[in-house]
Image (cartoon, rainbow, N blue to C red; front, side):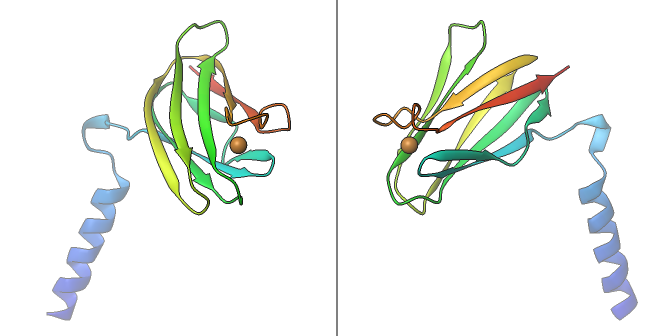
Length: 119
Ligand SMILES: [Cu+2]
């Protein structure tokens, strides 16, 4: 019985580690907000679907705006309270994306970053 449980756990672990039919989950980027700084969990990701999570580790409210360099469309996550988080689901195209906090003068004070999207 114990062997069976271990076997099932192994199968579950293997299934979780092996993408079925070549499908790949979305890229994930965590943006940690402080006064007055953004820290990205990674500076580059592959093109395609992505989840960008904003985590507010600061003492003030912060938000997230994002725009591809050369593009016209921008995406935003609404302002969130200290200690909270929010996630933006987006399809990224190759290029560079600017990220910034649009609250008050936060962008000028340092809450900005660049994310590179690879082919
Ligand atoms: Cu801010």
